[in-house]
Each structure stands twice: as C-alpha cells, then as structure tokens.
Picture (cartoon, rainbow, N blue to C red):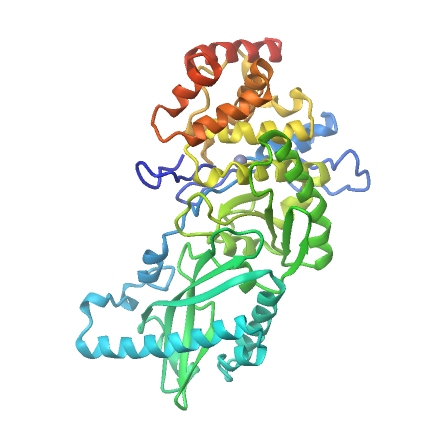
Length: 496
Ligand SMILES: [Zn+2]
C-alpha cells in the first residue's frame, strides 16, 4: 500500500489507489441484477459461466465486496500544486518546454511579470463576473477568436451558477512561455500568447467547510492590447485534477443530506438523491450524528470525466465502481470530500449494490478517512460493517473467498496489512472480508457502540501506539489476544 504523505501527519492515503494510480479491479463476474429488480438483465461481458450456478445474490455481493474496496483518500497520485505548476505542461515531460524561473534573465523576468499582471487582471474580471452573476462580463474575458472555448465558457458559467457556490477564486500561480508550440502560437495569433497555471478555489455552500482546490492550465492571448483566456484545458499535466464544472454541463439535485452532481442528466441526479440520503442515515445510525451528515456525489457521464476529476491516467478506472477523495492538494480534516462514481460500473451494480457501495463510501466521509491515522483494516472493515449492517447479506456470499481459504486451513495469522489492500494484492477480497469480520466480531463481542468507540479512539490518537492503546483501553485486550479470538471466530463462521 502507499506510503504516508509525511511522518507525523494526520494525512495519508488510506485506500486502494496507490501512488501509481494502481487500482483494485472489480471481479470478473456477471451482474445477475438486483433480485428486487427483475427487469435488470444486463450482463457483464466478462461473465464466467460457473457463476450461473451461484445464488442470485452472489455475483452482486462479490462485485460489491470489491466495489466497495474502491476509495481514494486524499489526492493520491496528485503531484501537488507546486509540482504541477512547475512541471512541464506536456504529460510526456518535454524538457525543452521547461523554463525554470531560476534561469530567467532580467528581460525574461520582466516579461514574466507583465504576463502575470495581464493574466491576473483577466482572472479578476472572471471572478467578479461569477460573483456578480454577470454572464456578459464573464464572456468578455474569453477570446472572441476561440469559438469552441466560448461554448465551453458558457457552460462553465452556467455550471457555476447552477452549483451552490459560495466562494470562487482564481489565482495566477506560474507560467511557462515555452509551453505553447510556435504552431499553436501562430494559430492563436495576437501579439502574445502563453500558458499559465491558475489555482481555482471554490466552496459549495452548506456542504464544504474548506474550499475545493484545483490547478487549471489557462491559455492567455493578447490581441489589440486586450488579454483574453483562450482555453482551460490545454496541455494538462499528469495528475492534474479538473473541477467537475469544467467537464461538461452539470445538473444538480439536492436531497436532505446529499448533493448529487450529474454530468449526464437532471433525471439521473434526482434518481440518486434518495439512495445517497439513505446512505447518510445508515451511517449516522452506527457512527452517530456528530458529523456534517452531508455527502456530495459526482456522477460523470463518461469514464474519462471520472479520470479528469481524479487526475488519473486514461483507463485507470475501467474496473472501479466508486472512489472517495478529498478535492484538495493537501488532504486534512475538513477537506472537501466527494464520492465519484464510475458511470458504467456503478449503473451495473444494481440498486442494492449501489446502496452498499454508497454506504461504504459515506462511512469514509463521516469518519474522515481521507485524513485519519486508522489502519486500513479498520477503515475498510468498519465501512463494510456499516454497509452490511444497512443492507444485510449472507456471510457465505459476503465472505466467500475468506471462507474458502479458512476451510482450506489458511486462517489469517494477522489482521490484514496495508499491503493486503494494494491494488495488486492477490488476496484482496480476503483482506476486505477479514477486515469486515474483525469489526463485526468487536460489535458482537462488545456491542456496536464499543466498535465505534474503538474506531474513534484510534482515529483520535496522535501516538504511534494508538491502535495498541485502543485495544487495551476500549476492548481490554491486546491485539494478539484479539487476533486469536478472531481466528476462532472465522473458523466457526466458515465451519472449518
Ligand atoms: Zn473503502
């Protein structure tokens, strides 16, 4: 599993996407459809014939068991603002286009300042236009000779007024005069054109306690003495996330506890509100109500949009159902957290599967798993505990791979390690299943309230012995004693 982002920090990547953007595959099994949705006969192309003999629920559960394994914590794979701002704009990293500021001559420095002043003025006008809800002013900042971008800009402005945005800021971070090729500069025309990195901060009113933040590449062009923005999407650097409102027209639906943002349709956004609200209620029943009880769900229309939101390489998420992530460069408590669904797979999960996945992800949101020192087995096991408490499932289905191993005499000797949750881990299902049953054992032995207390104790700990301390103070036992009991529990459940 991925390394910590920094020693002693209360931030780490807690889930199954590592630094390389490696992800957990969903199992290659057919979707038998939700038993309660007999009309849903979609089949997955990768179906295995042997699965047809399984009970109807098994495929969903199997898929969900890994579907829920899919959460990204805290900007994994994102290089961070400074690195992105300084990186060559070409994802292939053409060094010829990189001009570190340290090597700039006085003339170059002066023209850099002039570009920054001109660009900053455009950004200020844009910010004012958004604040004043003035579409004409906003479009006045867009290059009149970039018709495609003018179309995008209309959509972006419309999105910014559709979303409940309370703060919107653009900040000129850096530029690279060599990032645009001579051909591109000729195409743009004007007296000068360049690419700058611009930090955008935006906050969803009623949902975010801190602004979301991305860095956008903005192309500027000066013609007839006026500087305009000519693109928001030129030469994205690897790992550079895109705000959802820059990816296409958004439709928004609000529930009691949820904000659903769809890049597809208003009908789709509305259709997810009740399941999102239910997920929040399910989580609050276990976790308590001492959290914001709000969840934001992004529903991209295309996988490429999901990849844009996460700053992922193309096709990284072909087999991923949903991801929980902090929309900030440096994850911390209070960072704006969103759940983003993979449109195709999420749809294929069926109604019940989606509810399990969203409850699992919402548990991560409630317990601020994006900025928590809890070990992965506890974060994932607890999220599954909450999800499977809300949507009960047969052990035989939900712990299939683990039971198989236990029956074969392979009882786990330790609680799942962080490495066991890595995308490339061969026994990933067992990791999730055994983590879930570890949490369930605590709840059965001590009561659900004690499980929550245990989680909170580890979460709040600032010490490297937080887990051991919580075992002792909350459960009155050592980890080794717990593991021994858990092994017996697994053997009993598996009938081994
Ligand atoms: Zn998870």
